[in-house]
Image (cartoon, rainbow, N blue to C red; front, side, top):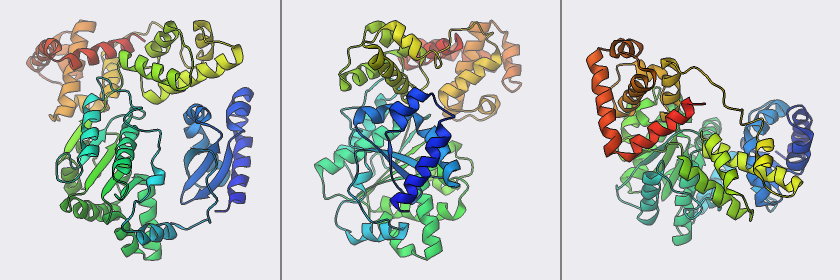
Length: 448
């Protein structure tokens, strides 16, 4: 799509955004953005600097929905810093052809975000294991150790950052390697275009000749039978050649219900790692890193206020911090009063809500990225039994429910099953610090 077409869509989107945002936010952050292109299902916008980008990243979902209305079609939204060199608009098949024409050189490295490195990643209790595994893959490619590497967890927890960090590390150390990063949605769109244009050989050459395949949000492959068949053969080709495959997902392989069994088993055959929400200390460390990058002096009480009230994911945490920086830029300095004013619409005063068994199950299920139905089900894999036992333990210790009452709430289980769960968690709290931290975090969320 020509630049003029992208600009026309963006102008229509800006009109729509006038009704969705405050005037100061719109004029300060959104209006200065420029439409670059709208090709291959991706709407590319540019911002003038890194600080601007860190702030507008929080608006990407809103921008994406608005562009969909303005263009009458769905786009993914990508934001870049500065303006890229002008390139001719190309169809997806042309992109595939150009990738294949340099079969001995690096591929798609431009899609790697240079800001996402291991040095800029803040390591905490919820991601330490994932970070170590990613460093291991990046420094020792090939073979079948950690292959495939499957990272899963909720949105905004750092999965994409780690994936880009692997790619950036390998690109820097071995620039001749063909590193291919792709979002699963784009992968699916390319395959659809391949079917339409009968370009199977080009598509397969592009993906099966990579030295390392990084594929983000693999859950988008669910329910797409022909796409799963193609990816199955691509996976096998790379795996048998000793090429690394790294995937991210919002759930573990076993929970991808509409995925072919043979793919589920292959996804689970390497190293599968859960990334959990950051604890308080990690959230403070992330905020301090953001302040350092923006050269801002922030009082400790502001760090504490944000970290104590925004706990769901890193993206929201950084978004809240950027909001405070924006208000402080207008006010002249950063204070706790400025922080409270800036976040008054995001952080509501704590309200005394009644904690029930249903509330406990809801909070536990969201913390561990499982469903309430899973907690009540008869499934016995460790991704479900652990959260289920913690939920039972909390119902017993916070709500003083009887063992039969808890058993009835959790799928009519026998009281001895509940007793075993409570005793096990009580024992593990002293032996496994991560269990204690998880329970403390869940209690904070239950407190409102």
